[in-house]
Picture 1: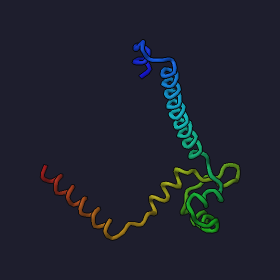
Picture 2 (picture 1 turned 120 degrees about the vertical axis):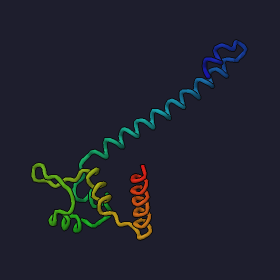
Picture 3 (picture 1 turned 45 degrees about the horizontal axis):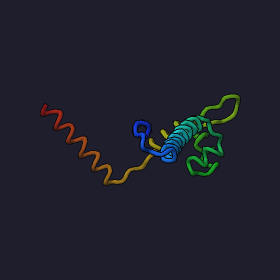
Picture 4 (picture 1 turned 30 degrees about the horizontal axis):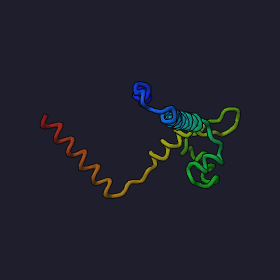
Length: 121
C-alpha cells in the first residue's frame, strides 16, 4: 500500500502521512495481540496455589484438599508447598469429563464404522 503511494507523484503529502499513520496503527495492533498472546502463554505455565487452583477449576478449596488426600488430582510439592500446573489441571478435567448418552452412542457408532472400514481395506 505504501509503495503505491510513493510511486504515485500526484498524491499529496497529507494522504501519504495518513496512510503511514494507518499502517503504524495496524502494526501496533498486531504487536499488542502478539504480546498479549505471549503473556497468556507464560501465565498459563505459572504454577497455581490451592486457592488459585480452586478458582481455576471452580470448585471449593475443601474439595481440592479432599482430592489431594485421595490422590485424585495431580500436584507438585516443591519445598513443602502444594502447587498445581494448569496443563495438569486441564488434563484432570478432560479425564473426568462426563459425556451424555448421545455422545456415547455417537462415539460407539464412529468406532464401529472405523472397524468395519478397516476390515474392508
